[in-house]
Image (cartoon, rainbow, N blue to C red; front, side, top):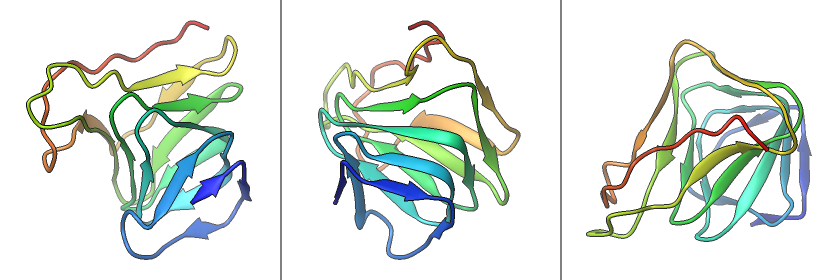
Length: 130
């Protein structure tokens, strides 16, 4: 679990879901080649862009991916931001939101969708307001 940690540049590989991002954790200029999980009611931030190289971010129930400054999420070989919620739940309350008043660019090859392994319904909301 990376709680309160900053991962600066570099590439994250390994077994999907083994890295949990929570608290004030920050991915700073990182490339993801695996799945990172954000636990229930947790959040983390990205700085200096996030590149998905076949990797993904799994936002579990009531979790948030914050972007710090004007950011972009790009895909070197495809990637996903997955919104999960408890089975049968009508609302997952996950979000992608700015840390302050900033813009987010979603690049080609990045898919944002509900997670098929824990379908719970709900809607996906993207916010560009502080």
